[in-house]
Length: 241
Image 1 (cartoon, rainbow, N blue to C red):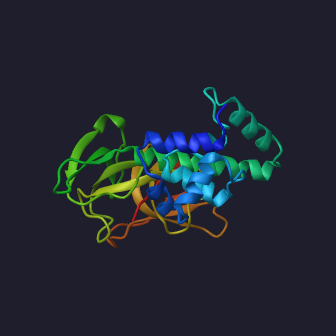
Image 2: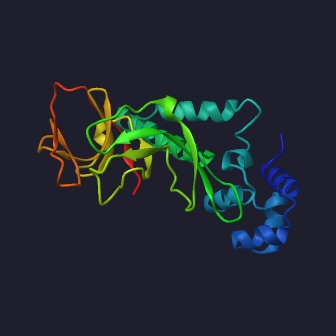
């Protein structure tokens, strides 16, 4: 198996990068890069290894040699590390993994530029009510163009109604990050909530012990919607502001 120096050199050649370019990005001398590649420096510092992986568009695990064709060594190491954690730290690892996956999925695209004038396609999932409630359904997909680059998001929705004026107007496209745990929601955040079969965009306000809440409209012409423990209720997303 190739050593770390061989993998650094091989990857640099694949990307057609000169040693000078790599050295400049790492903030080291050209001769240091060659020493890494020749194995003269046996233990590459972790900070340099991470930068190297970024410059070479790969992972530290690949450069070290943990990633084989079947990833067996890397996978074994991950399992052993995870099994050694207590339940609290395992939960943190899982939550962090979910966050990273969510960010990765957002980056995949649902947003992409269509011309040099910076118009962007956005896939709109459906409509959500800023009034009295409306179904949110996968069957309402539409692809629209917008002039400004949208923020990273899990899905986009069209607002139907005027109850969230002045923040959101009727027909406005809003961007949402998906969640699956009410504990992730902070008091007074703007959320996408499903209540007894209808979907709303509202500000959520919890009571002191978070046992109940209200869905609040920003337009004062609309009354708060009370949510109790007997309701079929969940928050499915946080609006990206």
